[in-house]
Image (cartoon, rainbow, N blue to C red; front, side, top):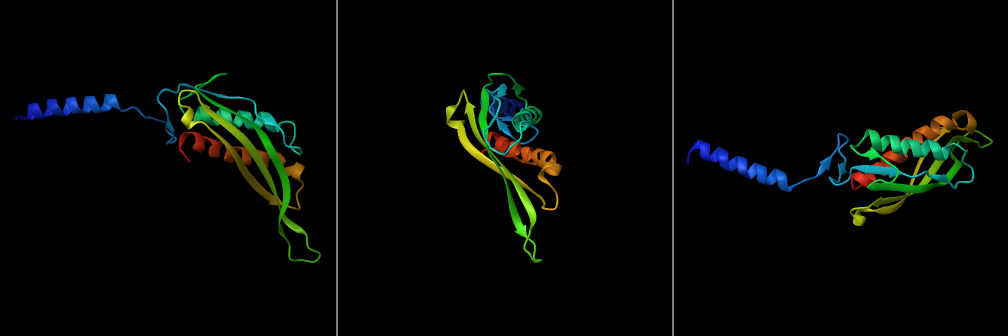
Length: 171
């Protein structure tokens, strides 16, 4: 066979293979189904007793912004892929104790838990219910109110990364 014939066969094979396989990828390395064009994030209601009034909106916005900036999906009110849930935990607890007498906490931990329901409307087998918890530590010499906003932002960023990974990276 001539080189020309090999090229034609190679082109035919490549065209056949490329048209039969479709997997969506984003720049973040996420594997987003080709059929999914939109996503929605419903308001995450605060059910944690100690959390402040703005935590629900800040977390909901963080999740929406992260998915929008790390995927090709468009935010809508009723997406092909839907995230719902609640903020179920917000705790502050001592982590380490100083060695000096009397014993005092040297580090304090803020933990936040969110319960998430992810629904893939076209492929329900990919849907899940999961609980995610993250924390950040701060020196006990500082008051929670002084560091709370920065800690919540840090924890929100970790939580949305975990949720994104579970939904789109089979984590």
